[in-house]
Length: 300
Image 1 (tube, rainbow, N blue to C red):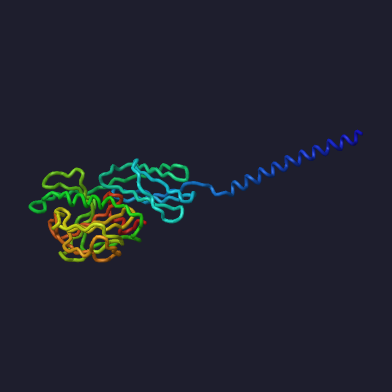
Image 2: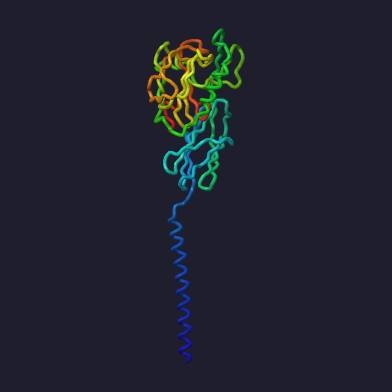
């Protein structure tokens, strides 16, 4: 009888050991499978990583949850994100000479998490000009032109029409760079900076589209564009806009789709202008940014 009891005890111990071993094996297998599962993490890349006043920041976001569009804000202001491809998005953030240098606070939300990113914004020295206007060039803007230009600057079309670096819109030399501060008739313009680049060229020389897009604004001096002069505005998509001022001739109409390098008009001196030149302004989300990085590095 004792021998039988010992056999039963030994069998029970073996069964218990097998159960422990099986449980351990299941735990190890589960752990391995967990390690093999993709880690869901929001990935964000900001370029340039050392921007200066007037630069456009590109925020590229990679998500893991399909069709969940991220949200982006900078200094507590929201900006739209556009899909580049599946689970990959991009937001363009503008800076201007009126911003304070220092640290930019960017917040990206997606995949159920929030990333707070700080980017240093470098200071930049902008020259000061003294301009004296008189006669026709010193007249105030009309409500018509202010209203139409303001509406144009609000455009945010979902499609991206540009591809690669922007073209120089005129072959003339640069006569006034972006960001210059000015005294007008001896009075400093506090909230003013030169919102674009001026090209000095002969009256009638061609002006071309710097990138593909849809003509969304055509304004003429004869219709009340007293300061802007003959004007063409191009929507490049996703909140990126070009505006050409002081034209002599306009060769396009609203609704036309133009390709990069296509002629849209000629250089003139209409509106508040002291001589023939082209003013090219580039806007991102309604803010005038420096066109130079868009021409030489490109912003994709």
